[in-house]
Length: 193
Image (cartoon, rainbow, N blue to C red; front, side, top):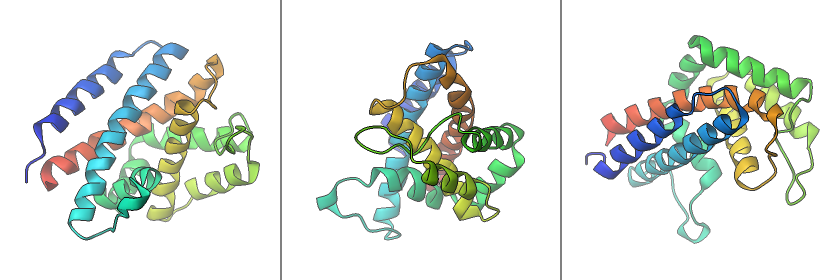
């Protein structure tokens, strides 16, 4: 079964939209991040459904779509943890971005794991996330990086990420990594289906 043309159009449209935000300012990075998160959401849903149809995972229809798992576990399962680890380890932009994000967590510039509904920081969960991002194990590291990205997305979409200039230091490396993941996920979807 070929990748549906609407997915191809969606990919081109939203990636182009994200790439058009080139200014180094807060508004541009928020818009770029929202565009990339929207596209990633569409693509990891496609990957999740393919895994389910192939019997590699089981979805519980009564619980709805497993959004966090789709973004952090099923997408890398579909692409291959080792393949993504290779990208994260050998692509200089990704390597630098991951290191930068770990450092931001370590010095508490940003709080990633926020409690619901108050948006309060959870330093133990942030330290655990940074530790997993430093892992040399492909599954642990890849899923931790995608967990950070998904957590930032949730913080933005659900109102705990403030529209403040300081966020550029977080969103810039996040958008670099997520774009690389999106391109790879789309490539895999294009040849797999």
